[in-house]
Length: 78
Image 1: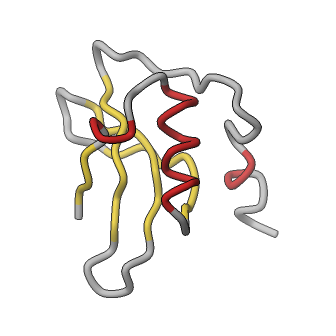
Image 2: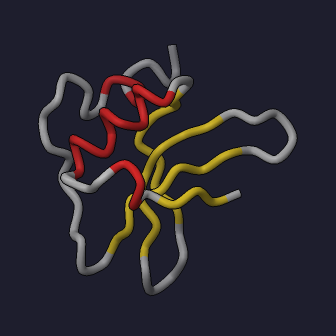
């Protein structure tokens, strides 16, 4: 399975490693399919770093908890 390990990063409530000064946590949604992933956008370059696919608001809330950011503060990009 090519992407099996990617989906397990950060799950279980532990804190994800990221630099708040350089990166911003985001939800990225596909315009065509509606598929959503969570990850980080580099503030300087705009490059997106994927963490995992999400399918429910509860999974987005878990990502917010792992990053230490309020769920309402995580913006959605397309």
